[in-house]
Image 1 (tube, protein in one colour):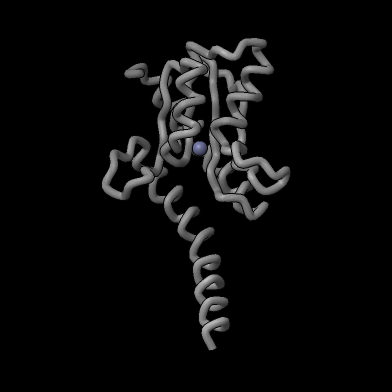
Image 2 (cartoon, rainbow, N blue to C red; image 1 turned 30 degrees about the horizontal axis):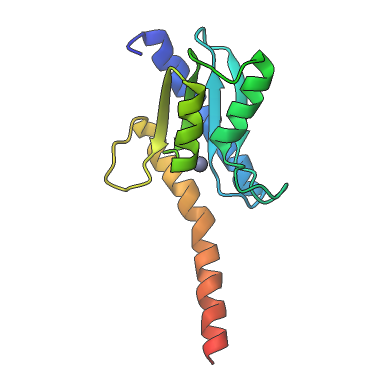
Length: 150
Ligand SMILES: [Zn+2]
């Protein structure tokens, strides 16, 4: 974890996760991206959220990355793999990540605003991506509620 080459890889993976998250947002999915890498830094899988198309409540980026990587290596355990995500995993994903027994999990933006931001330089970008995604939806919802009250 303190290996300088891993830190550089982590930054590159974090940037790639942001790109994947942006692509998810362009599909109207919640913009979350994940990059799963093996111990020598080879990317096993990248995935963004896909809960809407196909309809899948478990289509979170982390779960999709786990599925792709497990299929690729032929094992549901990925004990030396490292995951970089744009957003702190939800409880469902944490359970799945626990089952896969990853070496480490790094995330950019916290679910709680006062939580620990591990990849500080990408945390703001991740948070902004999520804010930009949800703000118009909230405004539309408020507008619809106001219309039904009139
Ligand atoms: Zn999740």
